[in-house]
View 1 (spheres, helix red, strand yellow):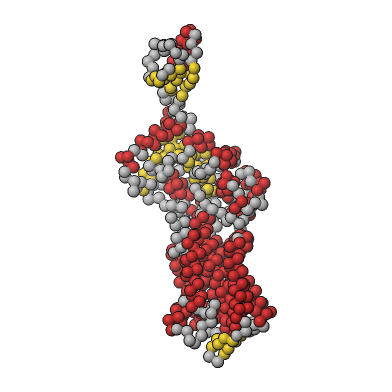
View 2 (tube, chains in turn brown, yellow):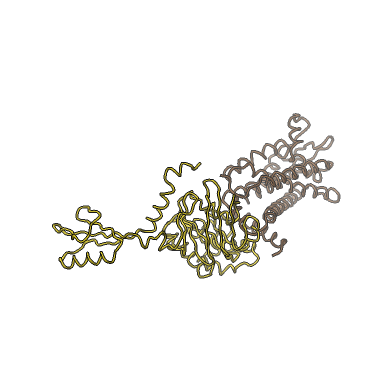
Length: 256
Length: 301
């Protein structure tokens, strides 16, 4: 079997197992959509200021935010937790004893996570379009959006691999993953819009970590703010950082 | 397999081991927990690197050509999970897809007796069935050599039997099997040859029936006599508890003949007449006790 078909084959099995696992299917797939419905139903038709002089309907804001959130869960949470469980139960060690190249195995997971992320973005955008008349980016903004989506999925996958290096066992995985991502999601305005009254320390934290930059890039096409290539650069830097950490510290055998 | 030798000196774990495992045999490495069994097989499998010595597995050095070796061996680890949400057939198909010349999935499932479970999710299999699936996965690439690390540890007797039958079947395929275990009966039942490892060293090696000369060792004859009957003065008895006598002899046939001739002549029934040879377990306990005595275990970290 050649490399390409081996890879697609691997994606197929990861996908099968993903949908049959109630926990991964629920938290990864249903959570973002559920939040979208809850937030938009609860907060209704307020206006929110997204940039000086530009206010939009809050439902449009959440369509973009939840699309970003969906990508982060599909990539970061999903990969980190699934791999920790696989490492702990010895699936990774078993795989290591077979001739499948490590890169194919890892890429199979990555492609699947990106696939789930993209499907979620499409569903979220369609939902927003249908119920909130959210504008779907076209032309150059669409291209910019896709670049950010691609770089973002890579970054959150790569950080998902990297975080497994500090996760001691499968039981600790959900706690460490959530503790590392949830505060950032709040500080980066994913759940609650960050307005000009936000404290400076919060703004700084948001500037350092990739979540805010990713969300801004994803929002731009939807809410009509300006797209900033610097956001892409910061997220890409995190992708590279995550890759380097994984490359050096990733282990295939359970940590005991 | 062209023969496999290793001598090597990792402190405490393995202290210089030399072994040849022949093509087509089921070879058991028997030893107590912590004796170095897993370290030993994981070096052969390519998971660990040796500190010293030479290793050849199927003519290949696992340290340097692990990829070439991986396509030709099958590994059942001591404990390793699989994706619980795939079914049996999918699991074997997935692992088959990693190998250049896989064995047909249906054939494998039949070999391990899981053909009726092919659509069952892994999480619904019993322990014995999961272990058979482990073997199925190891067979996926149609390997020449199979490693089984403690294949039945922690199983109830019927699950152990299930797994044993599967391993016995492998002999018919001409596979070489390297098995580690701490069960005497398992080694005795399955292995063509075995080695006993204790504290990182091989203490005995050979055929299960004749290991360490146990077929030629002193036998013990036990019998009881009715009240009031004195034992014959034909030979020196080695022990007596109540009316039960014990005779240790290196010339079993002759002594047994004399004893029964005396009994027939005297019209005495020898109740509980029994002849015991040292079992594999006796030999094993004796051999492993020597090396795990307090003096040598004190060096363990």
